[in-house]
Length: 197
Image (cartoon, rainbow, N blue to C red; front, top):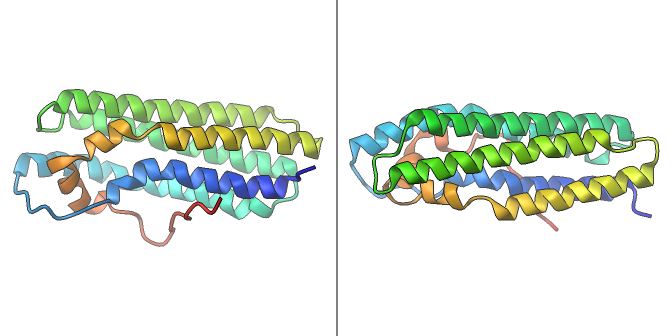
């Protein structure tokens, strides 16, 4: 029987893959593009993004700190709270991209719409994970561990399925401009763990 500890560690690994969706924003830099409209759009979005990236990192860190937690009830509460915070952050990111309007590039409106849909979809997926973890039976450790395993699988799917629209949003001039904005750069201090599994 696999206890909750090894499953918690897998949860942390799977979660770090999901965070890469947004943290890809801090990717490449410096194309030397001097398009003021694109820069202005990127600044609008990036100013809103930084607090959300920090929120996601903080939630990931909470799950990481709980990876050796023996008390199923406490672990359940930590995970549920973290998933809620991550969902709220993704929803806020979707609102930021929506509010900024279409980026001033070819197919900007379509790119914006797809990115908003993807961010909201990710938020919904984390809300569903929160509901799932809250329903797990904490009085039976092996049953709880099995339930956590299912959540790990969902997180893995989430981290591999998303990202296409966000990648599109961060392509070309927009991506170059976003990567130069302070708000779109990885928050310092809380590094995202590299997946080990």
